[in-house]
Amino acid sequence: MGKMIKLLLLMALIFAVSACEESNSQNGNDGKAVPAPKAAEKETDKIKIGFSMDTLLEERWLKDRDLFKEAVESLGAEVEILAANGDDAVQIEQAETLISQGVDLLVVVPHNAEAMAAIVKKAHLAGIKVIAYDRLVKNSEIDLYVSFDNEKVGEMQANAITKLVPKGKYVYIGGAETDNNAHLFKRGVFKVLQPLIDKGDITVVYDQWSKDWTPANALVNMTAALKANQNKIDAVIAANDATAGGVIQALAAQGLAGKIPVAGQDAELAGVQRIVQGTQIMTVYKPIKALTEKAAELAVMMAKGDEVKADRKINNGKIEVQSVLLSPIAVNKRNIDQTIIADGFHSKEEVYKVVEK
Ligand code: GAL
Image (cartoon, rainbow, N blue to C red; front, side):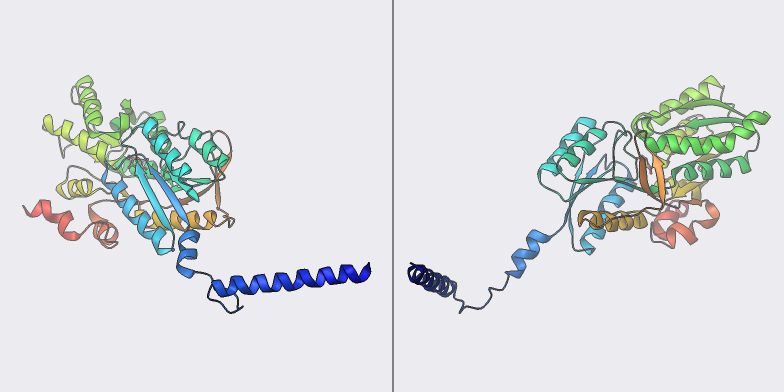
């Protein structure tokens, strides 16, 4: 009986070895380990990031899109980018598409800080982490927030304008109420204004949000502010350069452009040109390249499963979100060259073109 078992085992072994040799020779391999098909393996291994954007209507978001793509690709990963034209339903649908395509990580610029919480949930169910880019996603378990110090942006605007106009009637033209940043910018502004309001030096005579950040809505707001105050306004803080554009258009219609100082944000080319022309007194420059590089680096790390430790935590209504906040830079006529132009954000030629005309 024992002999019988040994014989059977031996036969099985011989059969297995010959079957293996047969298969190796079919592969054109003489028993050596089969080398991995490198190109194919690299393709399937490549990290894929999904980038869901609110809009591409403003100049800054085109820079964000292009520089983020460049940064992700320089890390050997790839990125699929979709922009929603300011429509919540479209953005949710696009983010769902990215999730179902099996991206390794999702980066989101939410049009609506609350609405995108649903996407964070869906992504997590699919095992995909989500980074909030520039704008926070509220009331969600977002994995990371990468932005600028947005409260500081508002403080910089208010510091610059109160230096110039320490007393008088102020107008605040806010951004989109649905964007958490609009609230942070405003908080920063009022942090500086409040003591002056309490002292009776400053009165805020008009304070409204501008839906979707559009210049057209800011124009309507500023026109109403001028009308309600018989044009007697001493200073305007607009939440960004797009809204500042609408404000300055309303002022121009009353022959007041350049006479009432206006602060903006983003260092958009049109905003910087207005500073040179004298219709806007300052803007806040946020180095987008640095933001895209930081976000890309962290996105690829997280997609690979590496742990990311951020130095700050920000409450989003649900959790303390790990946050990385970069520093904004206040820009006026005097430091355009050393900041925006030195960084190549805009060329000297473009910035000063308007005054040469
Ligand atoms: C904010 C952003 C600003 C500005 C604005 C309008 O969230 O931080 O830089 O571009 O949106 O798009």
